[in-house]
Image (cartoon, rainbow, N blue to C red; front, side, top):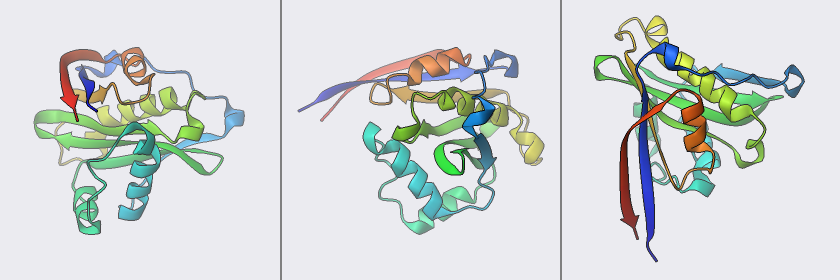
Length: 177
C-alpha cells in the first residue's frame, strides 16, 4: 500500500521572527538541558523513543561509530527537555555552511505530547540555534534557521513551527511505498 507524504521546509531569517511559546507552569518541573557529553546510546534512545510512532527510520541502521562521528561534529547540539527528571523530548541542532542552522530532529515522547512542553522546547531550541556561535566561536553567526516536517509527523508539528514564526519556503509531495 502506498501513501502520499507532504514535506514542508520552513525557515526563520532573523532571531526576531521567533514567536515564543508560553513556558509550562513551574509546578510541572520542566527543564531543558544540553547533552554536553556526546552519547550514542542516549541519542539513539531519544531518536527511537520520539520517532518510533511517527516513522523516523533513517538513523535506525546507524552503528555506534556513525552516532559518535555525527555527535562529535562541531556545531551539533542536543537539548533535552525533562519533566521532573524524566526525558520528555529533544531538539537536535546542526550548524551548516554560511551561518545556517538546521533543526534536524525535534519531538516529544508520546506520553509528554499535548502538555505544552513542545512549544516551550521548540522555543528554547530556536533560541539556541540563533546563539549557537556564542557557544561555538569557530562558527559564523547564525543567519538562518530551518526545519522540515512532513505529514507523517505529529498532527500539531506544522502549526507549532508556524506559531514559533517559521515560514514555509518549499513543499514537496511524494508517494511512498
